[in-house]
Length: 146
Length: 147
Image (cartoon, rainbow over all chains, first blue to last red; front, top):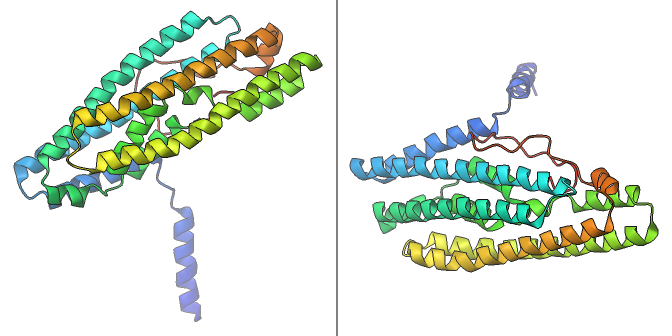
C-alpha cells in the first residue's frame, strides 16, 4: 500500500471514529422520513399518498403512546412489588387501568391498519409491507420484554 | 406495510400486562440467598421464585408463537380488523392469566419473607410513575428484581 493510500485509509478511519453514533430518536426520525418518501414514490396518486403519510404519522404516535403506557405501567408494578404492604386490590386497580388503556390503544391500532389497507392497492401493499422501522421496533422490544 | 413494526406493537399489547412481573428473577434469587438467613424460609422462597421462572420460560415460548401468528395475520391485506381482534383477544386473556399467576406467587412469597427481608430484596423504582409524556428513547435499566 502506498503512503498516500495509507493516509487516506487512516483519515477515513479517524473520521468514522470521531463521528458520533446517531441516537435511537435520531434514527427513528430518519427512518420515518425515508419511509414517507418511499410511500410517496410507491403511491403515485398524491391524494392517497397524503392520507397514507398521515396514517404513518398516526402509526408513530400510537407506537410512542403504547411504549409510554407500557413503561409507566412497568414503573407502577415495580412500585407495588417493592411495597410489602401492597394489597391485591391495589394490583387489581392497576390492572384495570392498564387493561382500559390497552383496549383503547388496540382499537386505535386496528382502525389504523384498516385505514392503511383501504388506502393501498394489492401491489402497493406488497411493496410497502416489508418496510422496516427498526428504531420503533427497538423501542417496542425494550418495553415488551421482561 | 410495516408488518414488523405492527407485529412489535401488537406483541407489546400481548406482553404488556405480564412482562413487568418477570424481570430480573436471577437477581431476586441472589438477593434472597444473601438476605434470608432462616434455611427453611429461604428454601421456600427460592421454590416460589423457581415457579416464577417456570412462568418466565412459558412466556418466552408463547411469545415466539404469538409473534408468528400475529405477523401472519397482519401481513395479509385481506385480514379484517374484526378477525384480528378475534385472534388477539384470547392471546390477551392468556397473558392476563399469566400476570395473575405471578401476582399469586408474589403474595405467596410475601407470606414467607419478613418486611425487612422484603425491603432488602425488592427495590422501589428510581423514577416515579408518570401520567404520560413523550417516550424517551433510552434502554431500560435493570435494577432490583422486577425492574
